[in-house]
Figure 1: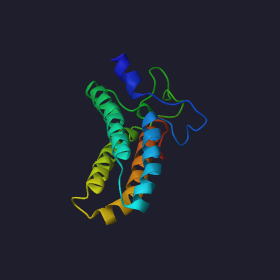
Figure 2 (figure 1 turned 90 degrees about the vertical axis):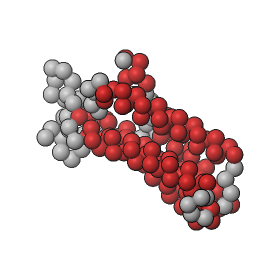
Figure 3 (figure 1 turned 45 degrees about the horizontal axis):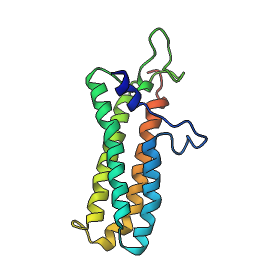
Length: 161
């Protein structure tokens, strides 16, 4: 269980931690930058599809480990106080509502990935329209992945209630 917790909580300690706090945020930010080309050329190359598959893998890894931890009774770090203390492990007052928010943003990230797949395939909407919207959806995906981290670490507006 310690390995699953470590894998789920993996963070990047870089000066750019505000924009890319986790490996998933890095991959989705690259996917966003990469999506601008297909929006202009109206054509998706094979390397971008491979990168999208890598993004799926790096999204499902914390999703599966988080589900395992939740089934074991775990909650997001910002929602519970450390045993014997009045603060979370990050030093903020606990906010129980953050646990549900964490699940919401993780779910939105998975839905965003599915929408990206649909847009690239061009089956539901024409590629001309779908690829023009692609940067918007990939930026939303990066925002969801960023918020998954932010919600896990920082308290919300109702901290301590």
